[in-house]
Image (cartoon, rainbow, N blue to C red; front, side, top):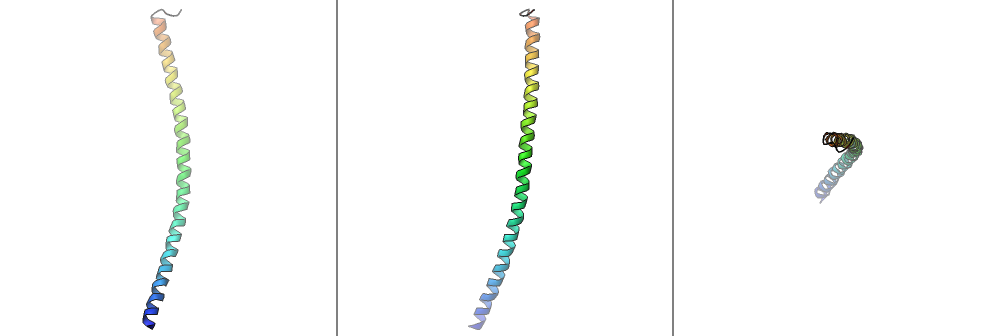
Length: 77
C-alpha cells in the first residue's frame, strides 16, 4: 500500500511540474502574441497609407489621361 501511495505522490509531483511548465509557456506565448498583434496593427496602418497614396496616384493619372483625350479630340479648349 505504501508503494502505491509513493507512486501516486511521485506522479502528482511530476504532474505539478508539468502544469507549471505549461503555465510558463502560456505566459511566454501571450507575450509573443501581444507583440504579433502590435506588428499586425502597424502593417494594417502601413497598407492603408500605401493604398491611399496609390489610389491618389491612379486617380491623378486617370484625370490626366482623360484631359489629354478631351483635348486631343477637341472636346475642350
